[in-house]
Image (spheres, rainbow, N blue to C red):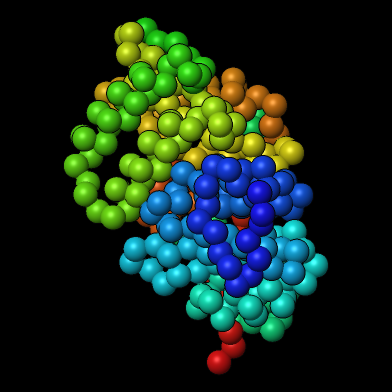
Amino acid sequence: MSLPAFPEFKPLALEDRSVVQGFFDRAAVEACEYSFGNNFIWRHFEKTRWTILDGNLCLVFDCPGRPPYALAPVGGTAAAGAVRALLDVVPRLARVPAAFVQEHGADFLCEPERDEFDYVYAAADLADLAGKKYDGKRNRIRKFEREHQWRYVPLDNGHLDAARRLFEEWFAERDDHSDMAQGQKTAISEALAHFRELGLLGGAIEVDGRFAALSIGEPLTRDTAVIHIEIVSPCCEGLAQIMNREFVRHALKDFAFINREQDLGLPGLRRAKLSYHPHHLVEKFRLERRP
């Protein structure tokens, strides 16, 4: 496969996985956007394109309702020059890691994007829920276990139909027809359709014989996994807590840290993520030309 060279851009496709993921693997960025799986499943909504510029992998996006943007270039040595070239194509870079800003941001206007900061947890904390700070989580799990027959099911090709049924029921109950909701629907459908080819990791909770919750993620760096998708039926108190715990205990047991992505500035989601006591936040920035 011939690689696109700047200023040519190629729409992101499954055939690009080995090349694009190779750049991400070498860069080892712990922000959730720097993985092939995440970019692939959202490619229709974000109109994702990529190119190679001065040895850097560069991805650009054109989402509904927001200005076009690019991620930070990864993999090359002339990153500042690549940023300047990208800013001739898009008005800004977004979700840029703090380390990149520290090294290359002096010539640009840099602003933190708090709503995009990722929440990263110690895997042992999520798996054990030990200590007083997790009393509430353990209480909800105990209530759930008293009231329901349940089991954890590894997500594989034999269970994808059950996962799709849960997803379709969950989405219908939300009754949300916004652009973002439709984009999320497409992204989850893509994750389930290409689960094996993308090397995704998944698990579900079966309650009284039916799937009631599922999680899907993938390796992000050598010691960190990222959770991209979590679907929880509103049927049972404690289901979200047990889904989170069991997914980490089983599918993500080989990782030291778990990235549960950002809160998007939603107050309820921010409270929920903080309630699990993150080990640290992954800071991200917006880069633009100086006036």
